[in-house]
Image (tube, rainbow, N blue to C red; front, top):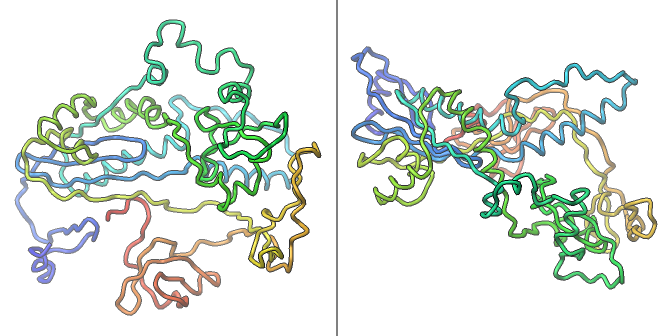
Length: 420
């Protein structure tokens, strides 16, 4: 970076972006352009990339993809359904529900588009002449059962059971799986619990479901102070393998690039004596041998916009048992089903002074700054935490009090693919 400071100072170059540091020359140069090969270690959570030429590695790094897209889609659908239920009745129309050929679930489409966007982003920084992507196909049933063959592929783990709930109970021997269960009932009432509920993973795959009794499967245990929050079991998830099997050729066709396989990358990485990492895998995929390496960049995908127009804020009370704040959902009536035998204690009686009432918030405008952006205030850099008073004030990190929005100026926006 130091060798370009003179060019920037003399006006021979101008800065394009700070991360990664990029400048554009303001005078005419030769028409020669060095060619580089880009290797892409595609993945569900992390993507490695490396661009190399014959002498050195030009750029390398690891991208961490955005997670939680499924739950955001569910939340958006929930609010939309609630709004539409308040409108007049309108006849159902199914003609606009047809999915086009090649349709992907929005969460998978987002990850596929991010791979393509990353290649386009690197191509604006480095003259890429060739792209090589590592692809893979996984046989999930063979991973679970190495000896499977023939008709066994048609008889999955739920074969012979009426529904998923029955299979989960059978798998768990019709017993509560909480090792510290204190339910002394002779015949425990069993329910199915989503293991990843606390981290917004509510998928109905068998690996995310477990059997609990009604004494353990309570709303209180779902709270941050309960044992179900943060409860993790060693259950293997095959989301990454499924994702790669679905999108591998879509990615290759969209980029119009070459492809390779994982065993080829592994053999080359071992031959070069490199440790296992996404950046090193991408270096091998790009055709790297003994070129001069660079420090890998850390890139994180950050949500660009919050398109949820409606939010619900629960009422807040003083819990007379502890004299601390509690939400209305925590101090609820105890009613869980219409069967009175399953209802818990009525916690409404512990509601003390009401601090705030529940409300629905409808967003009516979008502000210029969002959390994660970097701004300048009196020559110092600050990160944005939020907007207050309808955009009149802005909350910044390391500052106790908000400041007027008109006093700050934008430095760069922390959205999309952010290089660290």
